[in-house]
Length: 358
Image (cartoon, rainbow, N blue to C red; front, top):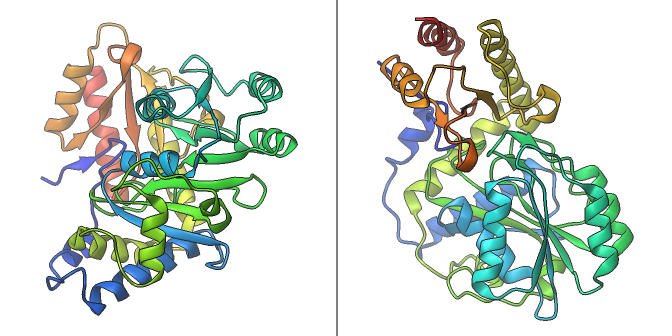
């Protein structure tokens, strides 16, 4: 029985992506690897129609957190300061990164279930002229909330502040407003909405942002990656087989209609499962309009513990995900990323019904 991953990454792979990792071994200093790397960088920019004259993608061997850490530790200038928006685990993680490196930072903190408090953001910027960048998570998988970047962009333009965006769980599935919001960079990974495998992450940065870069880490020096990769090199050994997988996954994305088509696919899957759960009496944590198409969270019904539900679904071939922190014993989460067929969705409906009514 095939196991379908419904956790927020890694994802169930297509046969094409899995088989891509069986291609010939390469040395990362050979022209064949340079060609592979350059092609991936171009395809990443093309995903959101970003011109290479203004933007650069930097491929890094590591998890999505490595990309976020590279972005934060490279692009906040020596005399800069971060305002971190926190309404979930990953906003908090950005604060921890800033603290670890001694990057001057302050936070606007909301309850995990709450949307961004834009008035508080505006007040924080008005009160502190040293703030140069806002760090925010686009899709906070803690709850499934898709943070609305439109109002944030307006505030940032008013205060001449740039955005550093954690798009780890939204890149390739949600619209990212590169033109209307002053985004200096976004960090993402291969093994979520792109349907690649863990091991490769990336930062897409404006070339202007690199001019004021102040790297605080050797391995995660974003400017070093862009400089080397622009010259067909790489500063360190890369995970070549995962590059093959990402390259194939990007081709699959383009062939299937790009970001808009992937978003529509996720929305269709999620609506089916959400309707099934609501019909079973399961309460969503957030309204559907507040959520990303990628993941929704649901309240565990009274008398049902997460482990029992997880194990029943795992026996049926599906892996769901627990809540985090204070939500660990009260919610479960279901993601719609990866190679999931309509037949798989039908089986999932049956498995959920059996697990929640048995």
